Length: 304
Image (cartoon, rainbow, N blue to C red; front, side, top):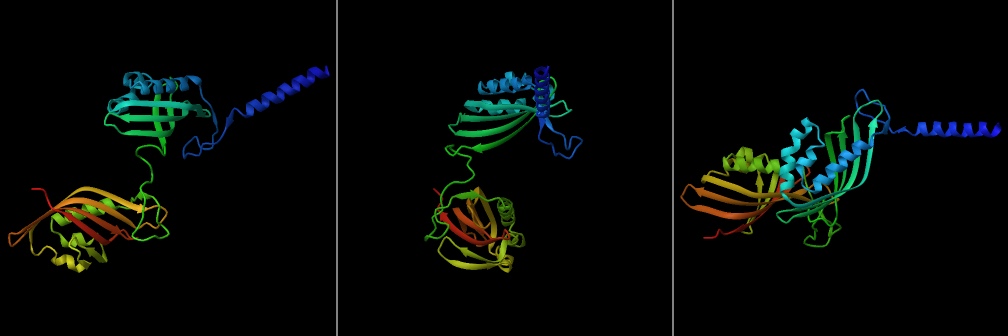
């Protein structure tokens, strides 16, 4: 009798423990589900995502759409088709898939970790480690999707840093990599192009610090003040400054000061009838306030 009671007690303890671990974690979103725990979802939701991964690798958009809800499928089908048509080969290889849901709700979130190999028809290659969340409804159809990526260090592009800074002489930042800067440099320069082409000196001056150093293509160095812009276009009949590309960069693990490399073509027609036209490579240095404080310019004669 004691043995039977002991077995019952052990089983009861086990079942209670099992019951406790059926839910865990916490949802902290600002809605009616705030504070609720997560529970495991159904395997059928995982099967739907697995089938999507298989068809994605086969570049079979119609096969993928079978696992989407009609509304979500209508939103993404053309984008999916365009994306996969650009690929020579693509492979989504999940290595972990976990279905969870907020307790007392209907939608399942399939947390998916995978490695994706991409080879475009244009020859580009990329390798990504992905963490994705597929939102699956009660009918086991995907109704939403989110993705986070980490680019493999051996990938041909897409890394968060790259290149190498040397400097004119060795310093404490020599050898560090470069990263893209995103402090509004593009917007400042695009407005500068527009104001310059409109010969709006006051508008152009807004891009610059009170005193900016100008290192011209001819080796001349000068200081440009905001007041100088009021007479900048007095001798011009018209100007045309067309950018080819803008690349704002900074040295990694340093202050926010950045430099934007601009490739462009500029044509100036003077009131005396003379014409100046060249291709340019220019470096625009942005200070901590996001103003241009230094410009270095190089030119190239146009081909006949």
